[in-house]
Image: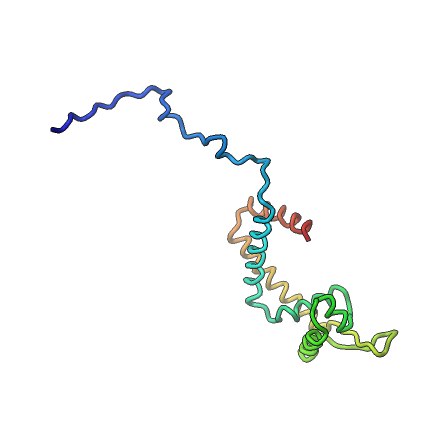
Length: 169
């Protein structure tokens, strides 16, 4: 036996079914709660690492050579030993990197002004130009991604994030 169809019953305006869902207090995050620093650090490391690896795909200079050129352009001439210490690599590894940069015409070596036994490594004009061109390519790719993928509000948020990253460095 089938039952007769139910007649809809008008609901009172105060019926709980008419009230939009309101999350329970425990479901709403407290704005005072800070994220877990370790989780935030892991997420930041992953995101920055992915960005850097993506940008390196078009680099003309290998990372170790670009890093040495960057030091020389920023800080001026240095000995191979000083470069090795700053890069935290063995002297032999740095000597190989310096030799490759020298062969490519990106650095040159000159005698130390006060200690003729030492050789200073310095960036050439071609080395400085190569480094700046690589940086410009990377910045261009980042600028294009910012323009294409981020709203104006997200771009403002990114601006604030850059200052936070500077404070972490």
